[in-house]
Amino acid sequence: MDGLHFGLGNKCIEKVTQNAGNLSLLAKGGETEVMLENIKSQEFFCIEPLENSEIMEFFYILKGSILFQENEKNTILEGGDYFYVHNIKETAHFYVVDEVTLIYVCSKPIFQYLSDRMRKVTEMITLVENKDIYTFNHGKRVKDYCMKIGKRLGFSKERLEVLGFASLCHDVGKINVPDEILNKPGRLTDEEMDYIKKHPQDGADIVEKGFLHPTYKIIQQHHERLDGSGYPLGLKDKDILLEAKIIAVADTYDAMTTDRAYRKGMDTMVAVNELRRLKGIHYDKEVVDTFEQVLKEEGMIE
Image (cartoon, rainbow, N blue to C red; front, side, top):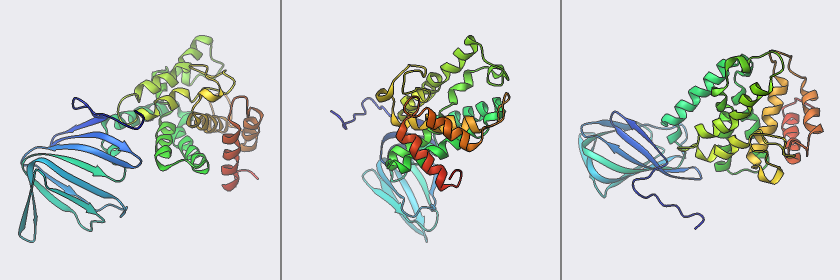
């Protein structure tokens, strides 16, 4: 049934293991995350004030016991008890008396900051950009363009979040492309081009597991083109996700306006005219038109 999800056999989206215990992401919907946390006995943990006062963190104890002490008053929380924080003003310190298992619900995404997989993907992105000095911060620029386009198209916060991750990570598959190919000053051979054409699928495979999974098809499709001339699948217009179409436009624009080993970056208006020329052929018309509005707002074009 659409919209109904089961987690059987201790299944989770992703798990982070640390010295004091572990945290498993069980569910994610909108901006809310539901996690299962296990903390070993005789460990301390704390909850700190957050910059965003709207965030609520809720903890329901399944088993074990926790001690909270304030002004010489002790509060013991055990299985069946719960506590939550909302707009907390000072750090709250807790001590785990007996190994505790609890349900942790947060109204804003937090797991990404703890995710081992996200850390590894981020490291790969840095390695890719260091491999090719001409694409330094390319992912961040593409993400910035994509988020502005997505907001203008009325994307929900959840959809924008996925688009943000996908656009930031879209070239992570280039980790498998040899440096000499990425930095070759001349035209690539067919064999060398085959390496390049593999990077969308390689990137999708890297994010396939864990909380980044929703970006899989977007990253896989970001080099597809409306007329079927793209890669790696040769998809056509309606078979390509809108998020992938957005990245295609932002990625192409940034590539055209950035200096390369074999050419200087194009003038902004020259790049925009090239997108216009291929509108409806390679690139989605609404996305190109929306991107133009973004550039006009920023004073990049008139």
